[in-house]
Length: 350
Image (cartoon, rainbow, N blue to C red; front, side, top):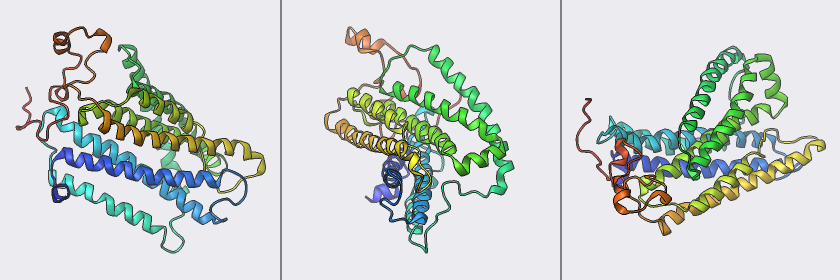
């Protein structure tokens, strides 16, 4: 236990980040389900008419999902684990700072959760912004939208030039592309400041926009990374069928799940019921993902240095399998799982 607390090894710290992100994601998902249960029908449901509590849950859900799930997993988890291996470094720079950067997160999460118990809680909503900043957000929206549009085309061109195998990581990648594009196109409209305020205050438009970018963009990218890198990190295969079921269940579930205001007219009851049903489908997908993690450790088969080496139907002999090379970067040259000390000397630029 002490070694985990004081570890300066990037792989152990990356593992801590990933475990923490999964834990925080479960808390954030629980909050989102509470929101959706309250909105499952008009009138008072599970929160006993406490609209301030609804806003507190909205605020906590937003902060937890972004700052304690997406960012720790993407930057802290995959970054710590893979970046040193990809550049041939023995560890991250400033390893002790790397350690403390993680251990600042758990108390931060605890303080955020405890803030809901102080007076009436932090119920500023999911924006937590002052409307006086509209000029900045107008400019920022345009600055973000244009390069992102270029990136979409570069990703599509990369796919066009590749040889696609529709494994679980690629399905999540394509799902990310489709949903992120929808989120991006709806975001361009928000560069109009007056339109932005109208869409914030009275519609689901902005809620749907950033959920398509984050809930369906960043999270789908996270799952793509998980299924692609898990065989390398753990050294065991995942169940391909379960992975594809997880993708389709989540893809269906998240596409019927926006939420924001604690009550609404009876005329909107039908679509809100559908949305709440989508939330429950997403929970089923999350539970399935938990089982997939268990299945990896219980039934996963050992993999070679490059688990994505060649399609199985191209492999005829072990000699062919050993000689075929589909990647030439460093991470595929070390064994799976990645050794505790993959490299013992600093990389030298040639």
